[in-house]
Image 1 (cartoon, rainbow, N blue to C red):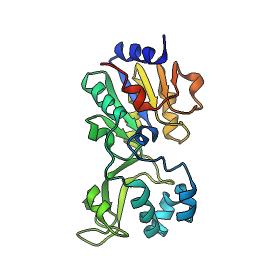
Image 2: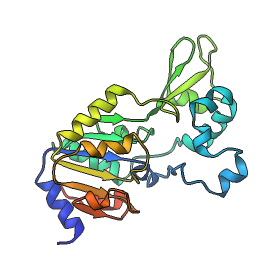
Image 3: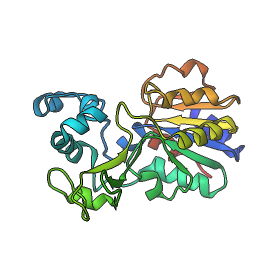
Image 4: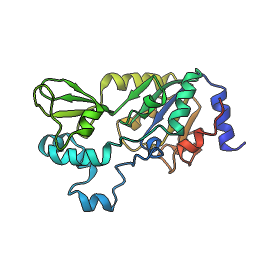
Length: 240
């Protein structure tokens, strides 16, 4: 049996699947993985992405943070790809219990997924640091320089988890519980190198662990099925 056929069999025979995804889920929507430091960063920015996207940098170099944020994090025209759409279809069919994502782009929700745990927050939520007023995606995307509050002129911060910041504990607990209670855990588009998110895999105790990623991960030897292909291409072949 080939790997796609085996995945099809696993999905067909389960109604308790949890999906855990990373940046590779969204690259097929044209959103690059910012950790892939290339020549462009070196030419255009004086700091690596991990430094710019840290709490300290945001507080001390807010203008430079937003220059990078507008340029490399906000993608207005990104649309859900085959992976997002198939996962939403799996939920609708009663097979998928939850999506746990490290992405902040809202594409799972745009595809129709309802139970989505966003480990790293969302660029679609933004709050004034002074008065707490909510500002939507378009308000921040349309801003020039540092976005400020409509009401009090305070600096707006995206509701995303920056380096040096803790994950939301309730979302972490809900994600742990979803994985611990899953019959099937499908992990896609992540190298499983970013902690504490990657550590969630350790809560899975059943025997149908599927890893779909273009490159190898440290957990390949623990998986029951490993597919080294783009996640959208793989899931688009699944028939529900």
